Image (tube, rainbow, N blue to C red; front, side, top):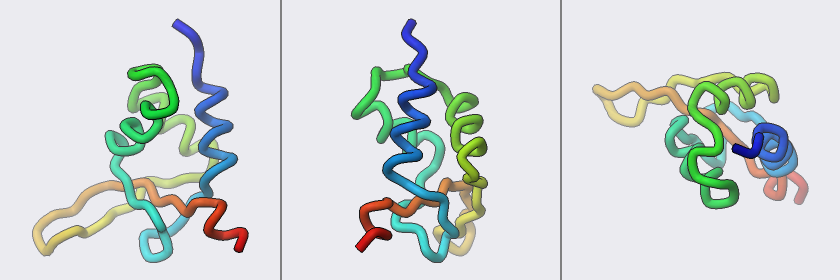
Length: 86
């Protein structure tokens, strides 16, 4: 299997930056981030553990997100770089 860790890391680094839940343009669970990545990279080229390692190495922290009164989920918060460079 081809190691896609470096290209995926570069893709995230070049297109997104970490954010807070209040300022994020995207709040995604790990599964949702993987789904997004698998539209550009081979399916199952990384797993949840590798994603966690990549995101934390880039300065992302998992955030608590209360989507409803009784539900708490953990999300990764992103801002697209194209949105911040206007």
